[in-house]
Length: 338
Image 1 (tube, rainbow, N blue to C red):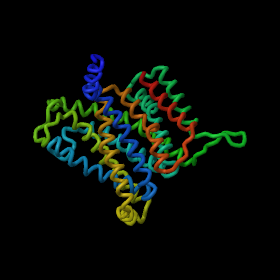
Image 2 (cartoon, rainbow, N blue to C red):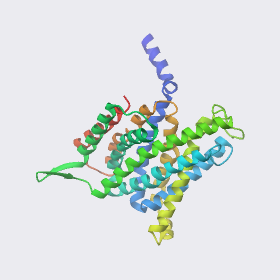
Image 3 (tube, rainbow, N blue to C red):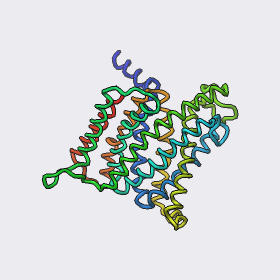
Image 4 (cartoon, rainbow, N blue to C red):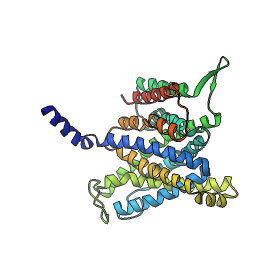
């Protein structure tokens, strides 16, 4: 009886004890939903219209959120250095990375697209080593090899005594670029958040209290991730709109067609809520309550979580080799942070 009571008490306080880990796991679930919604929407309306409308929706959600949390509908207290690094992060992570990711979904689907997102961990490790001087332990190099081995196991097949891709090469290229840009953009975001913290200190603002004028009494530290996401989303919207106009003479017609596709718009709404709004902001929040390593490892569960719903929704045949490859890739990511 005593043991049962202790277990109940531990379960009761689980969210408090492991708030960062709980948020990070929720991010993995959120990104799984995002990928499924985005696959349907991208195949119906195309990558550039999808991302342009998705960033527009994200900014609307974030504007309301900041108005409630900060009292103003824009990233309060952000200085020039913060804008610079988060702008670079938005270009790399959103404009280039999300464009490649949605193109990857079109060619190879969200299940394999998310598998390639495991490349973000080795990319972040290498970028952090080059830009931030972060150490790279020998085990991290082993993790890179393991991650790449898991991806290779999933996408390579043997035919006629030779090994080749069982997926379209274009899809592999776009998905791989998406994973690389995700990792690079993460490091740039980290640099932007550090400058944001410095700006708060210079302004004499206490991040543990709600800012003046806020409509909800929420500590400022909870609002900063939404502010950072808004800066990145604003840059993403500008970038996607420019690309849409450059590459499509009939861009107005494409946007109109996309907006009138009811199924695509509902999927777009789902991809927006679970992606740039909840998922990205929560991922930044998770790193404030647990180590970056633990957070990134839990984020990386998406390639495993997506297997069952993708197989059910899109009637995909899933092989043991593909499941094993996804598991190996996630294990490889965990090695970066042991």
